[in-house]
Structure formats: C-alpha cells, structure tokens
Figure 1: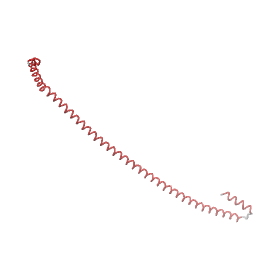
Figure 2 (figure 1 turned 90 degrees about the horizontal axis):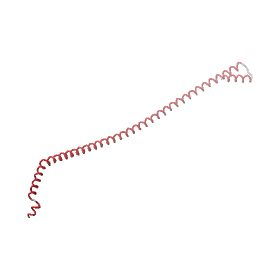
Figure 3 (figure 1 turned 180 degrees about the horizontal axis):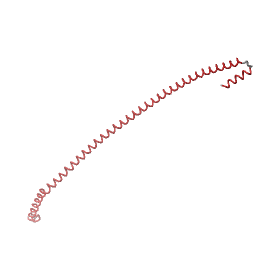
Figure 4 (figure 1 turned 45 degrees about the vertical axis):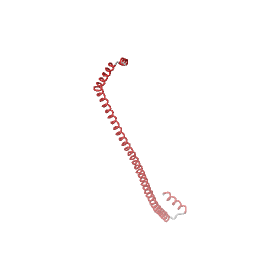
Length: 162
C-alpha cells in the first residue's frame, strides 16, 4: 500500500484538498455572494423591464382597439352624413323642380290669359274699325252718288289707308 501512498502522495493531496476547501470558502464568502447578488439584481431588472414591455404592449393594444373603434364610428358617421346630404339634395332638387313646374304653369296661364285678353281686345278693335269703315264708306256713298267704278276706287283708297 505504500506504493499507493507514494503515487498519491497523501500529504500533498491533503494539502491540496485543504487549500481547495479554503479557496472555495473564500470565493464563496467574498466572490460568489456579490456575484450572485449582481446576477439576481440583473435578473430582477430584466424581469421588471420585461413586465414594463408587456404593460406597454397591452397599453398600445388597448389604444389601437380604441382608435379602431373610433375609426369605425367615424366611418359610420361619415356614411350617415353622406346619406343625409344625398337625401336632402334629392329633396331640394324635387322641391326646385316642383317650384319650377308651378312657376311655368303660372307663366303659361298668365300668357294664355294675356293672349285671350288681347284677342278679345283685337276683336273689339276690329269690330270697331270695321264699323267705322262701314260708316265712313256709307257716309261717303251717301254724299255722292257714285258709279260702280267710283265706288271701287273709293273702297281701294279706304283699304289702302288701313
């Protein structure tokens, strides 16, 4: 067995083991604690940042939904306004057409009444003129006894004056 101790060199091995344990304790006490604290703080800051990102994403998503709802509402309102404007435009066009037709009928009725009145006036004037002409012719014929040729000349001269 001495060969084994010689190969293993037990005192050296115990010294190395003792040095390793001492180094492990020093590292754990002075190095691993602060390093683990830093790693833990970093993990917490990453978790916090991740939570903040998720919170911001949910806020953005909520805002996007609100904006889409508003946009849908605006689109619906725009459609209703356009439909209302079209209805009002058609109603106004119908009213203008009705007013124009009524005004045209009034103008036509007035023109027909004016024409009829002028026709009646012209008939009266023509009747008066014919009577005046007949009276003038009769008066001239009574003043003179004219032969047939003279009567024709007289009638031609009277009609030429017209």
